[in-house]
Image 1 (tube, rainbow, N blue to C red):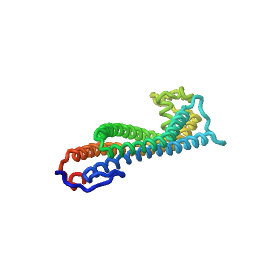
Image 2: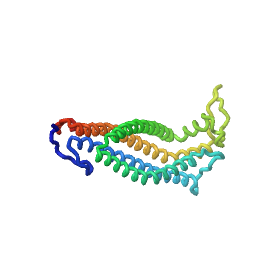
Image 3: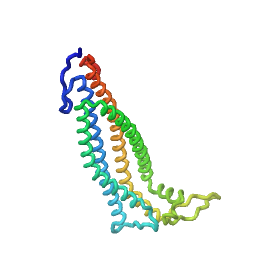
Image 4: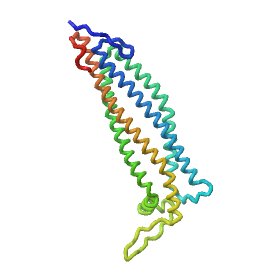
Length: 267
């Protein structure tokens, strides 16, 4: 005969204490996953607006009255590219926030309905899907980490504008493509020395690098936050998969009439 069990409540759903413990943990992870997704959308929007502002400030600084900056013939389209990317991200943030709220609410309603109806098949499906989501979030987090490291390297390189300008536009052979005037190779002591940019082009390039650096720094911070959120999502999805399985097993035990000690197993 099944042992009497103290009643419990999970998000307004009455059930035995035996099932309430794993079910409660599962529902908490569902709400946490929704919160992390919403936070990621908010962070994307905020950081996009910050970077857009910094890009505009950089352009204004370069074109301000009294500035000695003179764009070269085929100036790298870095600003145009970043502006388009930030514009797309901004709209993604505007759309993503209400979508996350709506989908999150629907997600919680469905999750609550699953435990209210003791739907074992639904819990098994959630267990599999959340396990897959955990793996996907892990890959996403690794990609954010890699992008963060790349941006840190770029920021470090931008700390020395002279070096990066000479290397990027002379050593890499892109000076002609960008309309820069590259002097002929200098022969010193029988060896060929690496040429540098003309003083005017070098000054222009250095100003361009300095004006772009703040936006790159903000992007690095952005990627660090997103990497943290992706890692958090990985852990939450993995935990949700585990708790979904435990909840499904608890419901099966109740239906099968197995005896169970309320104080064992889930503390």
